[in-house]
Image (cartoon, rainbow, N blue to C red; front, side):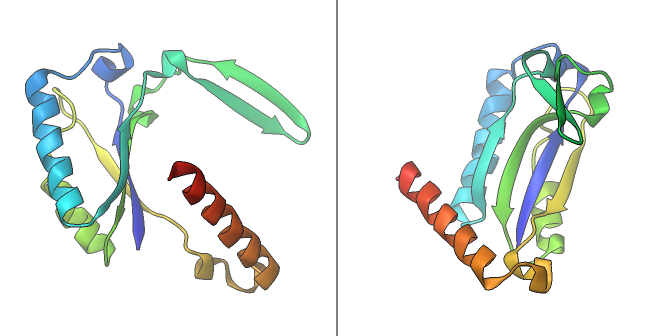
Length: 142
């Protein structure tokens, strides 16, 4: 099972405040544990929303909204993508995670859809297309 671990933004991360050397070392050690255990698939920090944009969809119309965005507690400052056996295992790993921010913070754990979750709507043709695209992406990253 794959899970996206979403690190919620803080006023500090939205202000562009970079982590301290000790925080980077602490998080690096945790990331090393995830990698050694074969759990971590990806993980990155994100620039503040002031450097981002949103696209709002309404039928065929597209509206681009430049950041920054309000409601800091709803924004994302970073993420991990992990593969574990269960949600409980994902929770146990993340309980071991150092606080990702200098102030109080929060992470969210969300399961990633797998092909079988889509049922019969995900036809053999669509599955083949998905597998082909994943192989192309993997080849580009190699």
